[in-house]
Amino acid sequence: MNEDTKLAVLIDGDNIPSAYMKEMMEEIAKYGTPTIKRIYGDWTKPHLSKWKNMLLENAITPIQQYGYTIGKNATDSAMIIDAMDILYSEKVDGFCIVSSDSDFTRLATRLREAGMQVIGIGEKKTPEPFIVACDRFIYIEILKRQTKETDSKDTKVSTKKEEIEKITPKVIRLISSTISDLADEDGWAFLGDVGSLLQKKQPNFDARNYGFQKLTPLIKSTNKFEIDLRESQKGRFKLIYVKNKE
Image 1 (cartoon, rainbow, N blue to C red):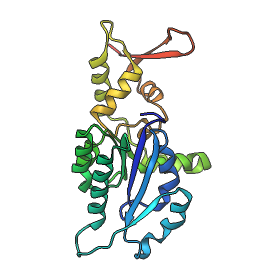
Image 2 (image 1 turned 90 degrees about the horizontal axis):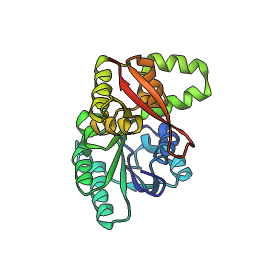
Image 3 (image 1 turned 120 degrees about the vertical axis):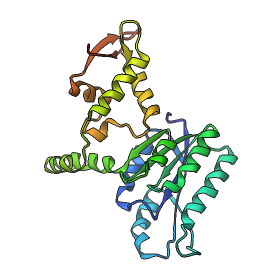
Image 4 (image 1 turned 120 degrees about the horizontal axis):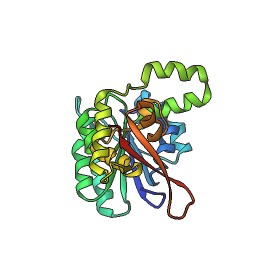
């Protein structure tokens, strides 16, 4: 995706903390221009009052949805109906579904079947089916952590202990097999292609989950792979290639 990509951002107000709004909108801007921004919930309920100022600041349209039946999530239904209306309007190139609710799994699948790019954003408690139904899934906790790390070195230490995931043998195997899938006869693979394939294999794969801003330092930290910097054809920048160590 790029800045010309038009995105519809649909937020489950009942399911996402308002404290993440600023970081979330900055993250979404990396993948395209959010031309439609809507948040769903029952705005008569006190717990949604924290959202109100943030909606004005970010030009997000609140959609009122009353809970007609106890035990049923009317917000989910409203989001799904609107998403399909937007899909058929052909005004966007992709969707960003902000929720930790597995009820949106089928919606994400349906949108991708229609050729839409689907980005999911939610908390780490998000069920696996919804995560894998998206092209990319971003944990909202890492967005908040980035801001904390910028604001305070002390906070950086504490959040690392609480939130940063360990690079397990399973993660190493995933990277290794992906390099093998793309490697040339000498075993080298272009890192950009490796990152893209990792994302396809595991939509929630993100170097930031492990405390790194980019994939290159993550790979270096494992000491399991060789890295080669090569000149681009025009010589303006270096191309990074990686290889499994023998």
